[in-house]
Length: 290
Ligand SMILES: [Zn+2]
Image 1 (cartoon, rainbow, N blue to C red):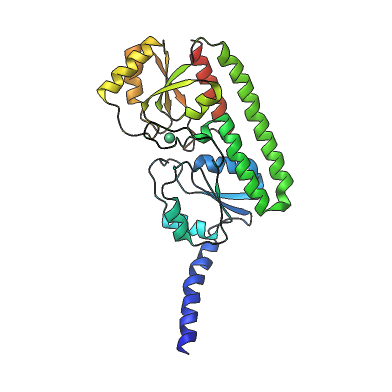
Image 2: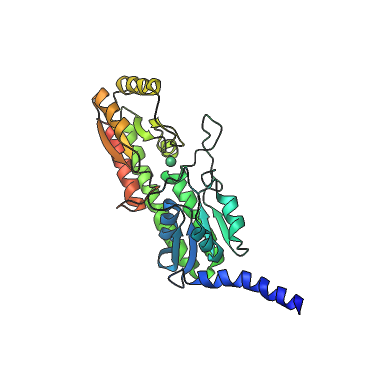
């Protein structure tokens, strides 16, 4: 009898949370948890109306410093697939997966198979999703995982993947041609998030904040940037969403440049993924020919 009671208790502990969480998904579609906004967007590009996506890091959250909430863990517990960027961005990953206790969960590192850029500190640059070739690789990993888990929709995922890949390749060809003709290949931005895009298009970025978006720049760093802008005739200072434009504005005033928006896509904006990518490419290439 005692043994039976303990079995029932154990079952209740396991079952109650699982039952009460079931209704937190709104549809009967494929349940995907994405670590942050760009992973959600890329998943939706492939999964279309077959997937329901929950994003762990909130719309305005900073992906470089974040911890998931209890409700995120509940979503992970009942999800089919978990998509994360990798390259060290999700520092909370192992703890969250262990806490979620979902043995059926398929975890997908979207950056798997990429050639990482290594920063001065020896850590990998995580911003692969901002690159044309990088996003193709990420979307391919996402597509493969969705198709393996839900083979009935394989053709649909493959079709969406082909369309996305074609679009990114078309942008790569178009902007590589434009940039090749530009006399300048350098641009200045707030947060050094465009390393992979620079690799795609043979560009060079300089920035106010480093790759990991740490803090305000020193007076020395600012002086270096002023001299860099003057030497290389930089006429535009880009500012990402969710970054304070104050330092960029000071720098721009100092060197007679204008401040323009650019998207890391890490947080939600009024633009979709492809639209942000097109905006960035157009703005950067225009700034090079000024
Ligand atoms: Zn970043």
